Picture: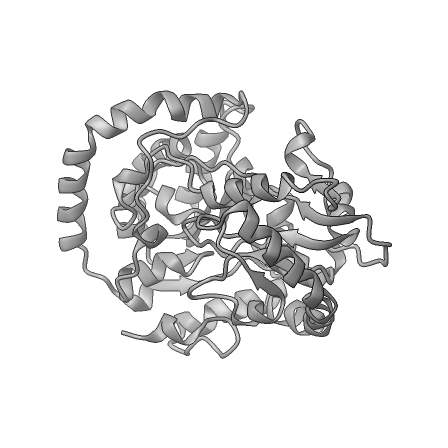
Length: 375
């Protein structure tokens, strides 16, 4: 039985939902805000049957409300989106933990440093007046005061954690051809920024240092976006999603990518393998941004690497000229990889990939870089 938060009912996870339906998996949407009886309904359902429960995409308050149920029942696994934001009790007590991002596995098995041990600033500024951003900025002083205790607590948790790699399952977010509208459009923009540039989180996992509580882990994206924006109309044309207030429709999002010569993309300072890398490549739009240390080895064929944190505007201008010389070849590489990527990250294939790992089989070539396996 698949228990989902409204947080996981985004367009991003539509291929997973469709794959679950084809497999006949029972699904339950936990609607704590809109349906006061949602929690009682779920409890009744899962205690009536012995189904193994998969928990997907819950927010902090939803995790807290569910914990009394699973403390006694157990018999669940966990599907993490942002693994560093997941309460440690769940990762400790789940039968299996499925990671969208291999960094959560690497932190436990090869000692990978979250965010490459970046030294964050004391404070980060909000980019919008979204309540969550404002609250994160307001809570940063309290997080700094609590830092010595949190470091001590996390060190003890890591020391007492019996890491069992066979429980840790890599489950990259799949893509589906029918959800990606492929069509030819004339280039209108030189650069497309189709993502956000602010990401504040609470580090609930002890493998993600508490020093990152409520700081912007997308600082590299933000700086790269802002540097490129300096060259708007001098001579470059830019689509910047940040200028569009509120929700951007899926068709608008896809069209902006198709009409761009380059898409600006990084996984953030935490080096997340965001699905945008896959979407951009499948649309035939090469990328500018940072490489990933563990995942997507194919990305090297589609990306012009730029370090958004350590580059001046003058250096960037030279890099952009170099990128444009390579753009036709990078685009050709993207289009040549489309069928391979659609096959590799097909939702049914990704479920099979997870089951193979549970059965003790290795992750096949193409998904991870060699250093992901280096002990």
